[in-house]
Image (cartoon, rainbow over all chains, first blue to last red; front, side, top):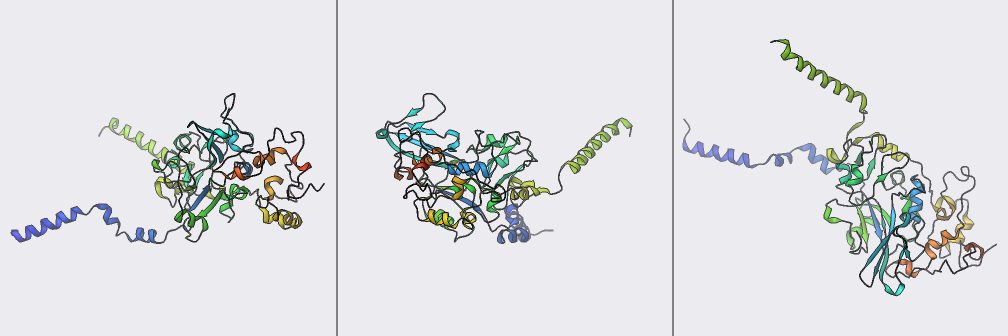
Length: 261
Length: 157
């Protein structure tokens, strides 16, 4: 026979026990705790773009295409440079002829329509260049949508594509909010910027960073607090593209403007 | 029980065995969850090494300097110091063995990447001295008059 005291005790115990959610119990999983303590990767690659410094020479695009064997005359590229011209009447003109591969050499705005638009110098309110490349997001939507596991994120944060495993369905190309993915015209698989994985894993900089004469592009390791790029990202005013998508992009921009999408 | 009850079960079991067999044959051994977990790390491990094995084409200025110290010194004291050799001379690849000579770009198109005048404030471009490529000696190559390793000097040829 159970007495009242015992009943109350046990009822409280059971109610209390049920209140602990299963997820809380995971805290006591020593394996997981250890994994979180000893982060397996000492590296998290991040990129820093200073749009004030970019002059639109396009050397980065040229170097990228040659280094990564993207067919030079095909109109696809892993990185590109956009020109923004905001006129006094409030209109914004954006162009990126051939991804900026040959630089911006004319005031004519090449948006693929004839005749090209042109804004007279005294009509320009502001004009600047914005280099774009893969954001190597912390929450990469392109990876989530891959039905076969052909695209994935490495421990150091870079999103890669397995060319032998990709079936070319194109979900990732649709899924990327930044439009950095495209079909490789030769291999017929999804293609994207991978921060020159073959270079950064050898301690070199990416081809575009080396090619930039103005220091507009920099790459660094976010997990190293003494890395100069990390220091800038941590201590200065930097922005990311399309933050509202929740993708946690890891390409940081200095001098973003609201026209930049 | 009668066999007509068992027969569909055998078929289902057979299909499962077939699928498992096909999976064992088709899926590479190193396919699995990487360090980023199921959501982002589901991949063939060997592919990381494939990407690391891509050939480096641009070797950087330090590589060029080993033999071409004189040109490097010229360049270092010039306003063009920040431009790496391979931007104009082409990627070193295995130079000097392969390729023995580089594809040097001496064209106007290369120079006007920066020096076509675009008066954009808010961008470094506005501060670069530039010309209008349509009116500034459109028939001539820039290097006829300007020495690219140090544009402050006159052409050395």
